[in-house]
Each structure stands twice: as structure tokens, then as C-alpha cells.
Image (cartoon, rainbow over all chains, first blue to last red; front, side, top):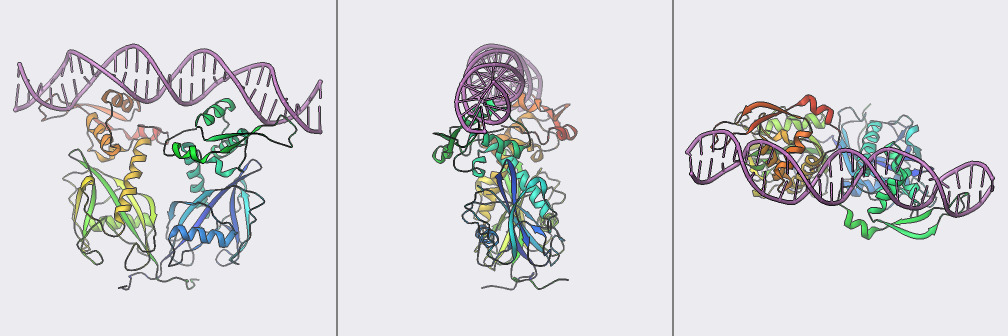
Length: 229
Length: 229
DNA sequence: TCAAAAGTGTTGCCACTACACCCATGA
DNA sequence: TCATGGGTGTAGTGGCAACACTTTTGA
């Protein structure tokens, strides 16, 4: 049933833009490449798609191989296909993004030796990136800026229990502007997706803040509605 | 400098979802295929990407070859890459959409003989579509629904001179709900992107409506701002 | 007792909704 | 003169922005 296709030298890859939040800073996951081209350069985690896997499956596999990270829901956001973007031939790349919790529990251990190491890098201090990865990163950042304005997804960046101030910080860092504390709290609580845990922060040398958890059940109802910040 | 790539049987294509508006109905451009697989089926205009053209260039070329249409600004919206989507092998497809003015001036004449004919079909009366094109169409429609709510792009579907009622019809058809006439006009005019032409409709057997034109200069200022319907 | 962040209400403004009647035109 | 769509204003409501002080805690 298979016929010969007219183009045999094209192929495609996945690149992942993973955002994390740590110490009040927005971070992105980069790997140090261990293969030509761009050996020793920093790059977004990415690799070629296998013939027997969907794009979504491929994204999950590649992320796992390059960083050790598993079970992350990533979403496709754009496909980059300029002619000269890859020095070895015509390779287009489907870009994915995700927001995820950082934490000591998720150690970054590349499994493939295609990456020497993987690190969370502050988005304000990016090194030069391989290929057109700067462009891919820029568009990924724009994407989450737009999304965070319309859907309450900032939780995904925080630990399971968090304070309202931490949540506000996430918004402020991503949107790049200060928000009013009272208005932020009023609005966020009005969405009814936060569960008050009746529990306080510990180990701080000031008044301990209430901890909240994201309530998935209630979130389902809100989803689809548009909100804005 | 080029090295052998690990995968040589993959390739990629473009599919275009073009929306038009005519006789109060939203239409999509379909071609009747003249090649296997899915010979004689209806499909979105699409074909394989050449090695020496970017995705955007390819989309423009393919549209021209299959329909005769030129100079349309199309925007990429999603890449479809399930394993079984193409019976001849692993072919992913980058989907584009655009909204454009219908009119007798733009005759549909396929140049490639890959398509027998091209037609504007009412989106409510779609025939069975080749490949996964129903899915691609569905997502394209969702995309313009979301976009029309946030940016005043409905003009693109109308002739250069149009009435406010025609514009409202576009919104109603795409959003699938009735809008209040007075509120619609108030809001639309408040954006300041319509130029009153001091000119009236002709040949209607009722009170002639004022014609407006879309003002590109003013639109530039608005762009980026979020609006909603 | 000081430093640092937590937590809390009110007001004015603007944008949105709902709603009904007269006007102009050609047949 | 009738049928058809064009065109207009207002009042009520709810969400948003702006704004400052008191409370709690550990050092």
C-alpha cells in the first residue's frame, strides 16, 4: 500500500519550552548539547520524532530522555520551519510548552547521552541558544503570558501548597508588572478554585501566611470561561 | 557539512482552512482531489512542502496551485501528527487558516491537476473529508471563534464597503448566537476602526444602510489590545 | 521593639446588558 | 400603505482600579 513519496530528505523534530518558578524567578529548562551540530551549546530539549509515535508521544519521550522528567502535560504551540534553521538539512520543529513545579524531588538526569546536562536557567540570563531556539523560546514566553491572563494556570508552577503572595509573584514575574495585592486576592478567591488549607507557613520570621491548594474539581467548572489579569 | 539523517521516510505537508462569508453563511474552501489516496474525495487544500521553501511560503504556493488564489495572509494554527493520519506513510501536516473576501473577481481555478475543482462550501453542510481534515477544520473553526472575540478581524470576510448589519451577521454566524443590535453598534463604533463613507447601500427595497470601510491606520493602534464579544 | 510581610474594605468609574420605537425606502 | 431592515438612548448592574493602615511573627 505504501508508495514512494516525492521527498525523502525531510524530517521533523520536537522542541520543548519548559517553564519553572523558583526563588521568585521564572526559569526555563535548557540542556547542554553533546552532539553536533552546536555541540556544547545550550539548547531547548528537543530531538527527532520517531516514525511510530505521535507528536504528543514524541514530546513526552524526548523530554524524558533528555532530562529524566516524566508525566508532564505539554501543549503544542507553534511549528518552526524556516529553510535554514537546521544546518544538517530541512528539519522543521514542532514546539511544545509546559509549566511545572520545580522541586528537589525531580532531579534532572539526562538518560540519553545526547545531552551532557540539563539545568533550570533564569529567563533573564539566557546564554546564546542553538539553532533558532531563541525564537522558539520567545514565542513560548509570549504564549504563557497570553494564557495566564485567561486561565488560572499559574498554580502549575508552584508547589502543592502555596500562599497567595507566592501566587501573585508568579503573575507579576510572567506579566512583567506589579499587581495590587488587595485586588489580586479578591479576584483570585472569587474564582473559587483555591482551597484554604487552614494551615500556615512555617519557618518565616514574619507573620505566617495561609496556605492554599488548587482545587481541581472546581477548576473544571471554570475552565473555558475567560478571565483576565 | 550535511550528514545523513536517521530518518528518511518522514515528510510534511500544509493544509489550509480558508473561511469566506457569502449570503449570510460561513463557508470553507474545499477541493475535490484528483489523486490517490482519497481520489474524488473532498479535502482541504493542501500538499507536501518543498525542500527549499519555508512553511509560510509553502502555504501560499499550495493555495495558489490548488485554487488560483493569491496574496492571502494565512496564519499557522496547529500541526497534526498522529501516526495513522496519512495512509501512505508518516506525514505530519502544518495547518493554516485565513479569512477572506469572497467575490466574483476571485475565480477559483486550480492550476495543479492535483485538484479537479475548488468550491466554497457552507460549513454546516460539509461532505465527508479526506484524511483527518474534519479534525483540522474543526480546530480551525475554533481558532477563528476565539480570535474574532479578541480582535476585530471580521472585516476580512466582508467586501471593502459594508454595513454594520452585515458585520454583525458575520459575528453572529461565527459565534453561533444572536447579538443585540444597539450594543453591537455602540461597541464596534467605539473601537474607532470603522470609517463612515457618507455613502448608502443601493438597490435595496428598504431604508438604505450607511456603508463603512475598515480603517487600517486606526486598527494599528488597537491591535494588541484585547476586546471581547 | 523593630522589620517584614499578611491581611483587609470602600468608592468611583466604566463597560456591559437589556430593552422598544420611529425612520426611510422601494415595491 | 405596507413590509423590511436602519437607526437610535437610557437605566441598572457588576467588575475593575485606586488606595493605607493594622496585625502577626521571629529575631
